[in-house]
Amino acid sequence: MAGADKKIAPGKGRPPNYSFLCTVKILILHQHFNTPQTGGALRSYYLAKALVAAGMTPVVITAHNEGKYKGVNVEGIEIHYLPIVYHNHFGFWRRSIAFIRYVAGVVWTTRKLGPVKTCYAISVPLTVGLAARMVKKVYGIPYIFEVGDLWPEAPIQMGFVKNYFFKQLLYGLETSTYRKAQAVVALSPMIQSEIEKKMPGKTIHLIPNMSDTDFYFPEEKQRSFEIKFGVENKFVVSYIGAVGLANGLDFFIECARASQKADLPIHFLLCGSGALLENLKAIVKRLTLTNFTFIPFQDRDGVREVMNVTDAAFVCYKPIPILETGSPNKYFDGLAAGKLILVNFGGWIRSEIEQQRCGEYVDSRQPQDFVKVITPYLEDRVALKKSQQAGRLLAETKYSRNILGRKFATLFQ
Image: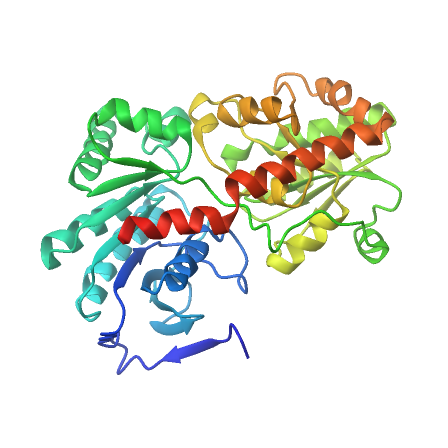
């Protein structure tokens, strides 16, 4: 069956020695690689597929929570899963140990891969940069470093890293990783600008996250899905993604609370998993919100069902400046599906949705502002439709994974 995983014989637990002489091998380092079958963020999968389409062989070294090494081939992507346990609820030290084990595993696995032209290292975590540097030093393979979040600035601004000397160590790791890279790929214009300030003269490509316009698209709501999620005859606002401290989803709940007080015909869906999920469930229960539903983590098909019943996609973050620089997957999926985009932060995404008239900003300090922002769309469905169509057009013309995938492939040609 198309897309089925083909196992790679590990040979007594060791990664096999592949020598595909017919194509150029590109090594992709991503500790949290996903496929459509597993769900989650799929950027690295899309990038690997773009290399396959360009006639190259992507070789991915990632990790999983199973107890042994596994090698598979998925749609032309050679994937090596290292047995490194990692969970979102891990504390700082357990996370750090998992990151360092991944670095060691990358060095060990790369020696069995045969000739590799270039390494593409995807952060987060920043320690992936260490792995890329070791691969360059030991095997002479140059690397391109992708920056999706400005680490270590993000954990520092969020208060996770407080020790002065540790901060300086992390800043040094960041700049040296940029300096030793053949080039850097930034996922947003703000990230690109910040790196240019730190590394003038360095080649920095802008390749943001992608909209899968072939998979997500505007469509009429299916009654079966409305019944499944309990949202018949409701205006649906959905948050789909990680449920962590950075996402500030207590504000999303406060928007639901304000809507319930205003007796608006809105239902809120939160679909995802993360360290704060149980805490948020307790808050919703305590507030006795009847307009709020939690949906378990879904694979890509499940997310499309949630998108089908959604009118507005909410992209939520805590009010911390560094978080405004990111490139969240949920934004691009919402555009592809033709949804009104709602954000509670500033930065480049707010500027873009306001300029393109495909979304609205909600003041993160005033949950009541949500009622003011959303009411015009409840009263004027023509205006809602125009905004949704503008979002889809933006996805098709600027963020289509076909367009950005071809641009990515040219980095190695």
